[in-house]
Length: 136
Image (tube, rainbow, N blue to C red; front, side):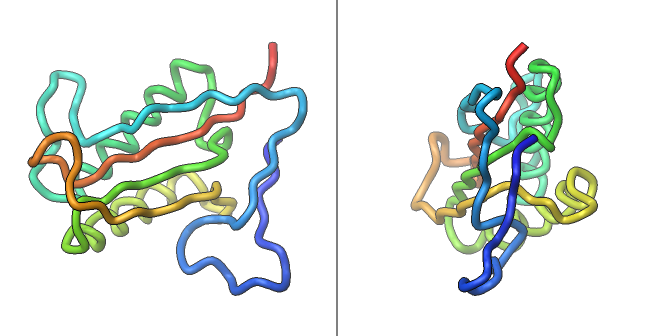
């Protein structure tokens, strides 16, 4: 199983993430392209970062399902937020999702970048992921 931790000698994480994540040798890494707040039918989940972040994580959840995996297999997340005005909505949605996915607080490594824009002007959030799958 993936090990996640934040060692002594550093300030605690300023959010819901672990400083380190290690993948066992008998696992393979799967890289998930950035997921945005677009539903299966191609419609935008909403104009705000909260609804788009929830949808991006729902999309990641579906991709994990397709791999026979779950949130516990996530090693690293990278979130892109299009402008500081969308940080609060994205943070609230991530906290809601993580409360269900990681009730014990065993969060994956995670980085956040504020960017000028994403691929379309109506997108506010994009989330990439790295998954560690046990070799079969």
